[in-house]
Length: 199
Image (cartoon, rainbow, N blue to C red; front, side):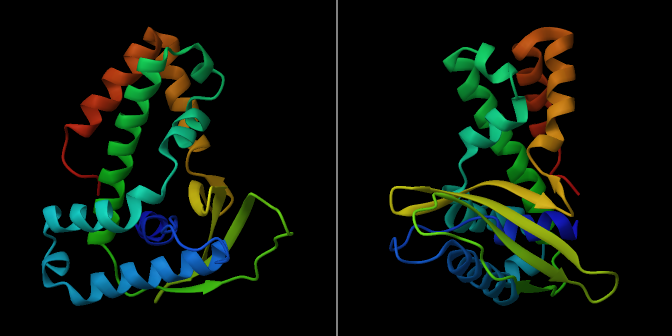
C-alpha cells in the first residue's frame, strides 16, 4: 500500500516553466499532494470521491498513459488497432486510479528523500530517484521515468525497489492477449475497474 501511495504522490509533474528541473517538479507536486492529504478531513475520512478529485486535479494530467499502456503491452501494442489502443489506455488509466485511490487512503505520514538528479543538457528522458522513509520498516527506493514533452515533464513509469510498475503488468497482459486477443485484455481490465477500489 505504501508503495502505491508513493507512486501516486510522486510519480507526476505539473506543467511548469521549461527551466524547472524534473526532480524539482516531482518534489513540488509531492509536497502539494501531501499537504492536501494532511489538511483535508474528507480524505482522512476515506471519502473516495474526494480522493479521486485530488487525483484528477493534481496527478493524472501529468502521466503519459498512452506510453504506459504501450510499455505494459510490449510488442502486442503494435498489433492492436488505434481504437483498441485507446480503450486499453483508458482502462489502464482507470486501473491505476483505483490503485492510487486505495494508496492515498492508506497514507501514514511517510517522508521522502530526493536523490541528486543525473541529467545532461538537452536530455529529454531522465530518472528521478527518491527514497521513502517509513515509520517502521526499511526505506523503499522509488524512481520515476520522466519524459519531456514540449515545456512539461510527464511520468511514464514508476520503479519500486527496482521493479517497473508498467512492465510488471506485461506478463499478465500478454497472458490475457494470448488467451483471447486484445479484446480479452480489454474485457479483463474493464471487469477489474468495475470492482471496488483496490486495497
